[in-house]
Length: 391
Image 1 (cartoon, helix red, strand yellow):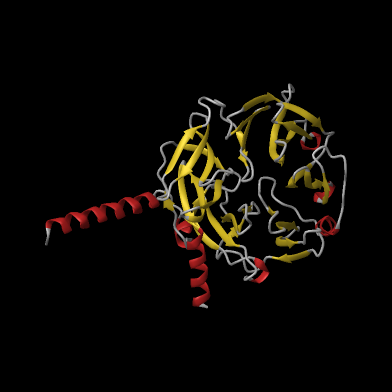
Image 2 (cartoon, rainbow, N blue to C red; image 1 turned 90 degrees about the horizontal axis):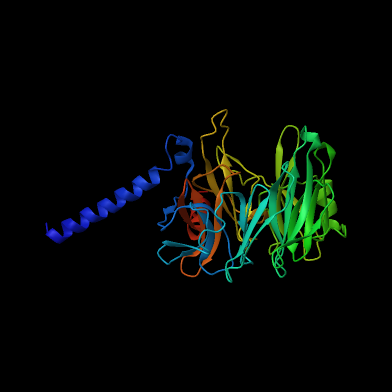
């Protein structure tokens, strides 16, 4: 055999072995992960390790926090390589939680204790503010509620002697002026931003009841309509760390938590928040897996990611499967059958992004055990087509 052909064959064999070895690193002892997988990820190469990732309004890019606790811009090239570069060296310089950003903004934020760190990726303006001097308080959640004016709602929790003594407050933080503009009274609820200074608010009442209404960032109004009345009547709830609402598609994925079961629902409405349809999700469950209510819509509303879960018992080391859905009117109820991917962190710790890449098309990047895993949504569509052909 020609010597050059032998070299090429050996080289290809080495590449395939490296790929298979890389993929196998994520399957460890968890046989349920391997047997459920319908779509495999591409392991991405990056010049820095990341602890968190999130979306940003920069083409072919996402943002992250590296292992030096620096906010970073991460650019994905046409081959899937990721270039990670700190936005401001050494900032914020602390580990934290609530790392976040949005597709329609250049702001990044993260909390650490009672401190909030923020930065604008484009002009590199940065802020650090201590929101409270009360040592019993901590930052529970951060949401961007006004893109035009760079306003963030920060939910603060305050420990008490028991769960019934917990207190919650909403602070309105103005990034442009680095100040708190408003502090609410003791409340218990979830902010779901719909548009600038327009919030779909879920108030948690006694006996696990939900009361939905529209309000503004300073809670000066309370507006109810057909949408809020119907989802309140059905006692619809959403996960507090999810992106369960697609503003573009006028769609919400929520649950009704009954004593003996949880009912997953898809809710749709028109531009006037009327003509509301609430339909149970029946066929969209992966085989042998449950699903998490931590739904993550892509910004355009065309894709949804969640976690496929199993009963772990007391063993918390088992990962979840990542699960994708296509959202389109061609499917019954407007949402496809599930497509199961490889392992992902449990839903409370998952970190991932959807990107409409100019060359790779719509993609999803999942951060798992410090490694970036890429899924192409065109592969999700192919799996769905294959499922139809098999029926």
